[in-house]
Image (cartoon, rainbow, N blue to C red):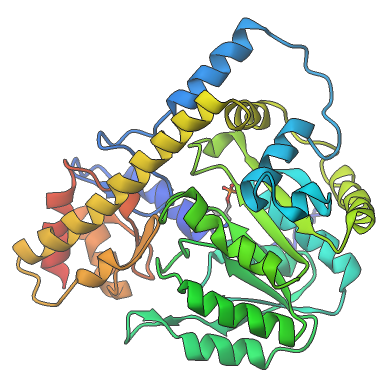
Length: 398
Ligand code: PMP
């Protein structure tokens, strides 16, 4: 009998479990479309030039590693605010945004969830159906009851927007609604600007709390275009939460760079909110690490490096779009009868392929092509060398 005798084995993380299976697969043609990571056309994880330049400058002037402030590097937090709300925007100039550096986008979400549990302990959380799986786990672990709002319509291959509005309309006042700011994970379907206006009207009318998850800014239509939804929420006069992740947009996955921003009513309220966010951080991990935040702050704060980042991010975005088109064309050429053109109407790193669990399992076991059982494939991991193989494999299972 030990202290841990009754501890149960936790289920494996579905996506990281796929990675382990992929690593153990001896098929020389294997392709990993499971995890949400961007690879270049050579199948390599990019190390962006803007990041290398910032790191080179940092190495030339090495600095000692004291503790950061609880809320992170001041220049980083300022850069996040400018990126999310606009440097000259009213929320930024009036000082009513509380921003803290987070450990990746996940860290930003978790700080927000823990803070919300203090201010709205009885609120329910709604996530999209389906959503990034960790949304449910993270808000559940923060102590919330988590439910879903309608989102994906498999028959229509798109968003069930009426269903989404109906779900939000029937939510109780104070409900926390987690919204994907752009490039919806896992479906790849976003709502339109006009539909955002309708969502915002319901959020306002029903007094819901919006929590925008921004993990793919720049992967959809462009940095400004993907961030435009923030301006809409500001214009509606709402207070809301935004989590930011630079994992994908800077290809800095392992550095864990993210943030949480909370738009408050005024500067004084923002300083009270900030003080509470700092308590959450202090009692979880005390203060964030330096390197990733310093790199992002250096790039965003230097006009030349910033322009280089925008160019490199643009190249990633364009390459993904090209792969979507190649996938549609390749599937047709491989003999797939059904119209797969919906793949090019999706946006961001993922495609809900519409393939069944059985088909996904066959892709994996017979062809070494790994996607999730839900049919999600990471199109950002396709390249000119593996695309034909993937198309032929899909053609054989559909
Ligand atoms: N939100 C969504 C929707 C995501 O897809 C991800 C990453 N897969 C995250 C948040 C977390 O990002 P990070 O890796 O920076 O913690």
